[in-house]
Image (cartoon, rainbow, N blue to C red; front, side, top):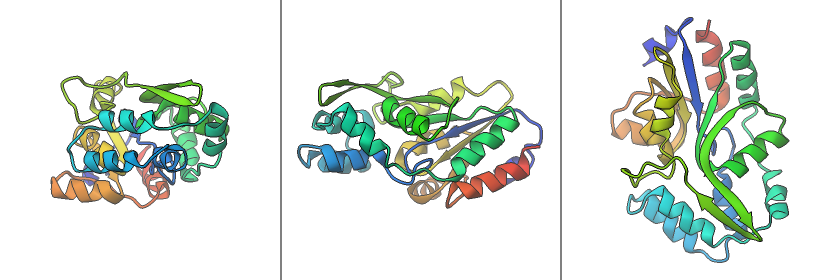
Length: 224
């Protein structure tokens, strides 16, 4: 994988980012649940998801059902989310190379787009789960689910295939459980934290990173 990365040169490249704990410095959904869930049932669902007993769609649907937060309250919270400072630098660098990065997330569109918009980050395509407000409740939808697979709420693998041009090299950047499947189908994977542990166990090649500064430095070096 390192050999392929180091020899990208002028080849077509499609670059995909996870959102929570990759672009952001925290898990925004977990933080919303901690602050706005009416009970602690979300912890049980989280544990069942991590152990493989349920898929992320069932987990997220159950967790968000108990959230009570108005649009104004959610906006106030989302304004506190911190981003890895190098994400914007990567986005600007890729723009100079005429490469459009894509975000693939198991989070919700409103969360992601609000965070990016309020940080002045524009023009990045987002594929994620969707939501709408009903008073102080959040109603969820999962437009990118794969009905043949119950593991993921958002089938990132499908969106990698659909958004990688023929002959292009796909690069995926992520950190956790929801990034395992796309990591197995991308040509090059940047991994950190829990994703590294899983990919090691499953013998999937990856390039380690600690923050997006590492990714930024490497991409500047290899993209001609």
